[in-house]
Image (cartoon, rainbow, N blue to C red; front, side):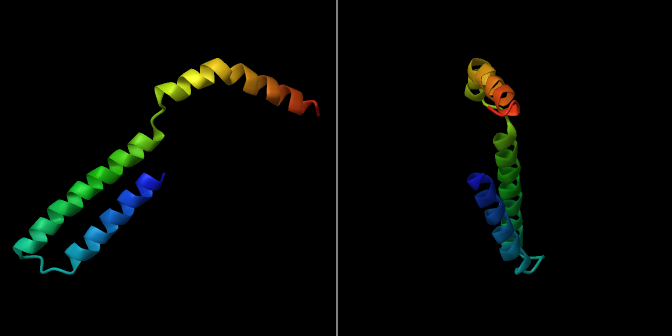
Length: 78
């Protein structure tokens, strides 16, 4: 999640820099391209953070029975 937050912060910073420029300048156009790129990078980081990884799925398949057993025993108070 740190990567997601870092990308969001970079996107916001780029927007602030762009918003401080005259909208009809070439600098604004360059800054706007940077904003668009950082926005895309943020969305990609969010998507990556929520995609299940194969190694997590393997772990869940291999050890999921232990978690279920632990939940059953803890529900009985022991």
